[in-house]
Every structure is written in C-alpha cells, then in structure tokens.
Image 1 (cartoon, helix red, strand yellow):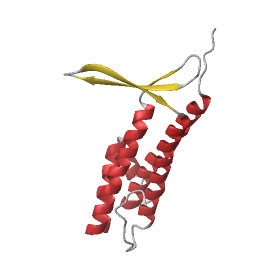
Image 2: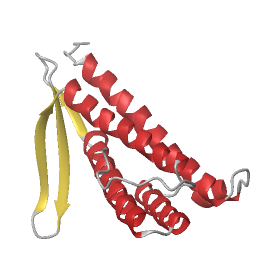
Image 3: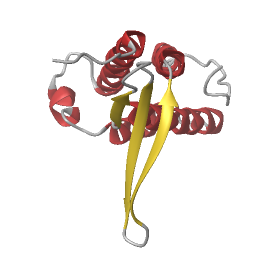
Image 4: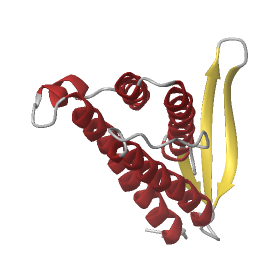
Length: 165
C-alpha cells in the first residue's frame, strides 16, 4: 500500500476544534440549565439534541428575560450573533471534504454547494493547522464569554456590546 503525505498537525488541529466546539455546545446546555432551574434535569431533557443555533437562541432569549434591561438585551443579541458566526466557521472546517496533496501533505478543504439554479459547485481552499487553530481560539473565547455572562446573571454589571471583549 502506498502511503501519502498527510499534514498531521492539521489533523490534530481539526480534532482540537471538534473537542472545543463540543465543550461550547455543552456550556450552552449548562447555561440554559442554570437559568431555568439548577438541579432539575427537565432542562436536560428539553435541550437534548437541539441544534446549536437553537441552543444559542434559547440561551439569548432566556438571558434577556432574566436580566430584562435594554443594555443587556443589546449585548446578548450581539453575543448570540457572534456565537452563530463561530458555529458557521466551525462548520466550514468540519463539514467539508478533506483531501491531502500526495507529495506535500497540504490539506485542502472542499465545500460542496448545491443550489437549484447553479447546480453543484465545489470550493477548494488550502487550509493550515494555524487557520484551524484560529477558529478553535474563537470557540474557546466564546465559551469563556458565555460563562462570564452566566456568572454575572444576577448582578448589575454593565455589558459591553463587543461580543469578544
């Protein structure tokens, strides 16, 4: 069997992204659980298997309801938009067809797009481990910010509209 070159750092970075995003998604579940009723596993049942975007929406709406002020509502909507963008970036990396140059091992991500009017198209993009790790860092930062919101739920702290601040 002929072995081809593969960028092992890229494979490792993709795995790190999968684990980081899983943690962010679980933190959304936990944040919702804390806002509704800690200790009551009904929330776990209600959020089980919900898509990421739905979890983001539920988290943001619950948070706005709990805080009930305009400044917080604006900040949490901005944060929810940021969470969705992070999810889209993750999806672009993970839900792709990956190939590796036979000689160099360079990774290429191919995103298939299917459109009624344009048919099937594919976008081929060379991706490095560094680019994947940049997305992972955004995921980790988003999770940190999520917990800042949860921890400050019951205080009167002002919120920055910058979701990454």
